[in-house]
Image (cartoon, one colour):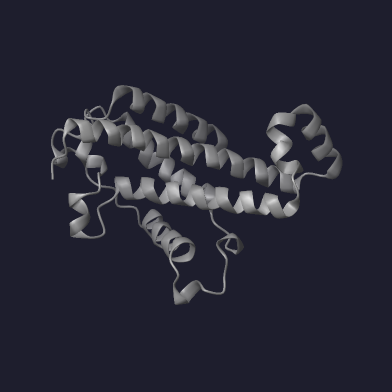
Length: 192
């Protein structure tokens, strides 16, 4: 299905939002991991030096767990959305409503939808463990599962960078493309 220019303009902006949220939640997860491993004196020094950024770690543990779980879930949601944007729809009827990467090309055949078994499996796992009540995972909380955030980010980063660097995706708004590439630069910096 061919979407109108107005729909693609709005979708381009929404895509930038998802890339931004994916990168920003990754930053938060990296800060959490560093904080959790730090010694008490290091935490005190960090808190004094970077008080505005560290204030989140000074709240009570119960509240911090709530925020941490929320950020992890948000990060996983955005990972799944971005993968599914690049990949082939799971069901035929999604093609009528879901905007995919190839919708931003003059000819849909100019973009081959992503085939990445690792990301496909992760997308399925994120849906099954995190966002659906299934009998398989009733005994486990999403936060109890060790999510491979870094591995997912590495795989997704390369696929997204290839997409945003492709000049043939001409229906993507230039400003949104540039912002997405900035977010991906930050993500790449954090991963390496």
